[in-house]
Image (tube, rainbow, N blue to C red; front, side):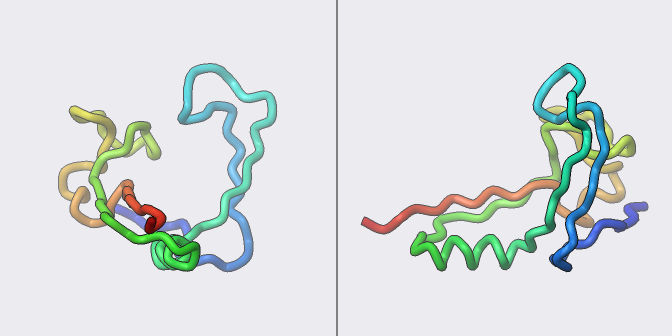
Length: 101
């Protein structure tokens, strides 16, 4: 079963990763340490609205184009959680927004 272990809401502290590979291609990285900060969906949507953009569409999906976790299975179109967990949490979301004319 899906086990949540990374924060969804920002705490001001980054998540630190040390991986020699990247999801963007083959090969090894020279500098393996990276830092990431979580951004809840509300923070992202409100930033777009605050920038004067009009939200046209928000979609969520059960697939990722890369294997985020060793538990993910390769399926047509990408990688997904095991069957019983796919409806528990989205893997990606897409926002379409535009600046009004």
